[in-house]
Image (cartoon, rainbow, N blue to C red; front, side):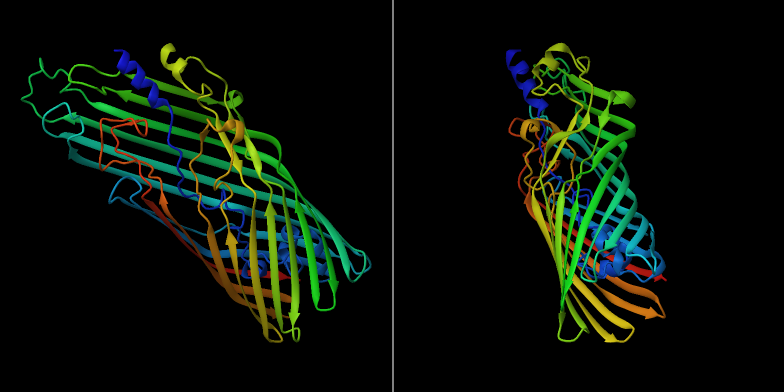
Length: 496
């Protein structure tokens, strides 16, 4: 029995691996379906038009004199995710979503007799609802101490929902025709919904086994795990920027503060692990155990941080003003490890000797962190006619959590999200009718990751897998390949 107790202590740590959720950890996936989208956000130095309030509030002064109302709407957004060998050799999973992005609505006012410009906006900075599910039933010799094969059932479900809506007001001051500065105050409401679970079971289908020799032959061996949470966080973000023009050059600088937590609502979280009827010999079983905790409301403290960032940009006229080159980059500072979900410490989640064996007794809390990185974009515009322009761009969209350090929270549970880099190419047309401007274009996005650690191994199951601290699963190997492909088709208008 000492062996059984020593083995049971191994099953309380969990393999950390990543799945895909595009926008939660990719800060340049944002798409406002405007001129700035065709230029990939390379408008820190100017020409952001209705999105100036987001990219650099100093450039609001470039808007037409008078009132400017802008609205944009995506015709559709389509994303597809493909995984090979994610849940074992030969497994293939695919998830797709098809939706229309929420509209971007802004209003700017630039009086004729003042150098002060004002603006207000409501926008969706991020939106995604990623779901993935898989189940299978097969016959394997999992319970190796029993003769013959067993009925083996496995299931996997995962969801990442993220929606972040911003409401902002801004002011910009044009000190001279060459220099201006501005500031924006944003209020944000970010909703996260998350689910991750798997289950595996095996039982003998041989009715002729002697129950005196094989007392466990009629039992179902089972290993399940699940975790979930949901909450909405309300926070403040401040952006401040400057812009400068000289000759054929334009320069811009914008600073974005880290998110400042106000309060959260709808807090819920749960986490459970069950092992049942797992044996190490024909007569000796590891003791069954269940670890389970669920909390909600004031028992949980929740927050989801966004980092401090600095963006710079330049615009250069090429030859005549018919052609322009746009370059921008944004540095994101790291976020040290913190508790995204801070749960109450609960000693009643399992039997005492099981609870004592947990490496981290803060069972229900989730940790998070981000790394330091830089995104870069290059854009180009060509004025074909007086009222017609072609615009295009290519940009990086690096993962904020790839190789991020958790520091003191390295033993804490993590949300399973994306860890690979993405890239976007945008192109389209901008045309004017009187003082009103319109855009029509699209974007293609892709990402790829190779030889990541598998999420599970349901195709080569073992009753006990000591190497990976799992039951009813095979060895987890670096065989998982991930592919992401996305398309956006959008239109927009700015009415003056």
